[in-house]
Length: 98
Image (tube, rainbow, N blue to C red):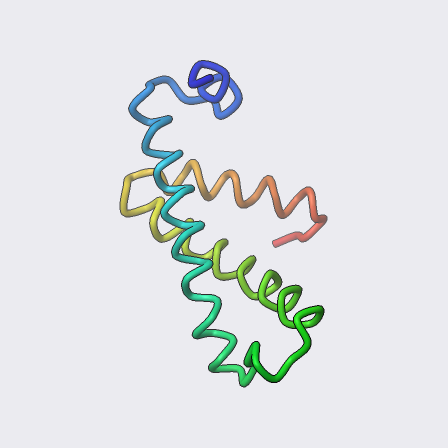
């Protein structure tokens, strides 16, 4: 499995692959954790909004938080260029240009 990820991500070492997987896991957890206070700051509370609206809004809030945090956490672990290139590739898929 690690060998397949190394080939796909164009990286050389198992250690770098493990760091990248670790950054993905930390970032996802932090983004989900920060979504609730962000929604409360925006005045969106789960108790007063229908769950059919609350959860899609929460997912839409998590997405940009995740994108910013992954660059920050990735740079802390010395993988900024990997995650920056990944971000650019993803934005191209969404047809968002610089």
